[in-house]
Length: 378
Image (cartoon, rainbow, N blue to C red; front, side, top):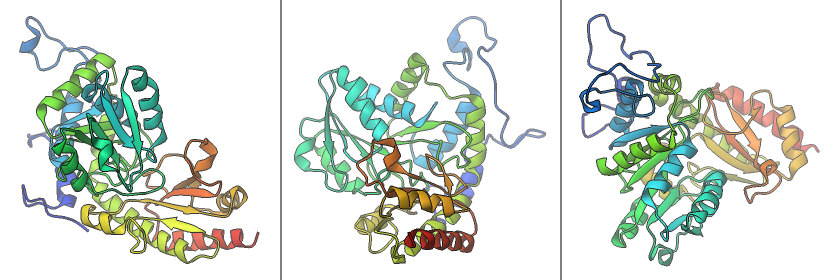
């Protein structure tokens, strides 16, 4: 399903193919190759040269960031990873004594970062459940960090309502948009001040690079992020950025198949006797469906479900021929993992986070049913 953009009249599938490309020039590539340079030739005043040193800027970043800005609706800054993007938002938005409100059920490394490094820097952290953010917790806060849908539980919150409530109290709002990507959900259009993502996952989609980005409502915020990136050295490699930009062209196509597969898988799981529970915001019976339907264009590739225990989960992986056991998500290959093996998320031993890939839907469902049937025989 493709959606029209009111700003230019083109739909998503068209926009991602052309986003960030330079103006056509005779004999030139559509997307220039990656620029590998630690330094650039220039003399005199640094302001007289567009590029001086590799930690400050790179033309390959410029093309990719221009593409992200077109899609996100605000200036974008690329980082070496999704966690580098998170750290940059926290580092530029917060100071000693400030209060950060963040999900108690979101990505665990974000919680570790906030309660470790930033708590040591005298940032106070309040953790709240994504599905029910208490209004009183926003009082006196400086930044509200949301993740919707959450990783791995797939809870959803109302971005527009929370952004409005936060802004009434002078609180900035950042949304981790990794799971749906910008084609599935546009946080800036829903009122957020920052939209961030681990481009490592579905945005680039091939499980072969590490990258992240932040898009901002204001140029001032973006400039602070660029300064942070320069000073902290959290810069992305030009090859990774170029590969991610190249991969944008297929984002609409990939997401279309992945989301079709995710919904079909979720429906299959919901009907199988071996499965105790299923979470997918695209299922009408899911508790997050009503909000997700209002604010999401696509429901994403991630499905979470629960089997009886660790043995059953491990049997599921052993029997499957199409579900690769791996961490992370968003790849063109279907992957899954038993999240309790990390001892970080408050989930049961049989809880599995699955990321639907681009394989044939019928093949995936047949493989899934066969694997679950084997589990139910234990």
